[in-house]
Image 1: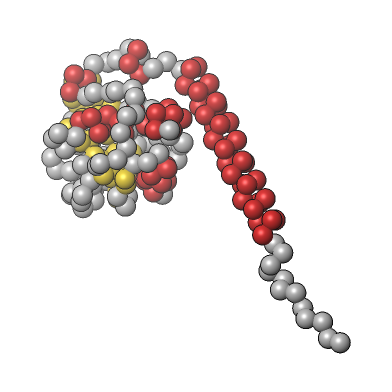
Image 2 (image 1 turned 180 degrees about the vertical axis):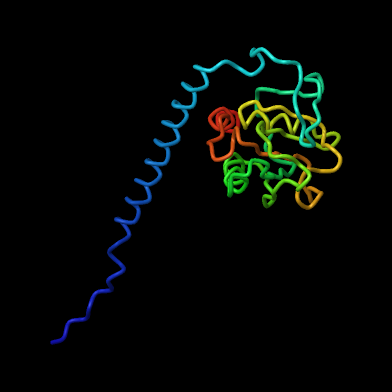
Length: 193
């Protein structure tokens, strides 16, 4: 006369599948909306290449360098095969970690973030530095960041450790991008996808 109780976790499979499907649909819609918003923002602004220049930039050591030594490229074509390190030169706590996560989301292989060296002044313009032979990879990172400038690695390396570990590209994050979404995220996703 006793009834055996039915297992309670056996009847939930359809509800879990529906929730998973709904989560995926919401994520796809969010990515599409973000893409269209960033596309509109990017189309409203002028490109860095067409903006007037004062013919100089300041590198991590505070030295003024001619723009001829600084390069920018617009398209992201490769996110793997090299490692990226983000160093916080902005003074905004947590911004290098946030940028590292954002770059990982675009497919880049990112080392744990660091801070700038004590000798490096607070940065106002984000720079992407590269070791010899890594110019194209640095250009891909710079394009993903919205077309920031690239330059050869200064000596000494402007990180708190004085080195880059296994990374060959360094993003010295400045106040212009600290705590902000990556401007090139939609374009990088389009190229990679």
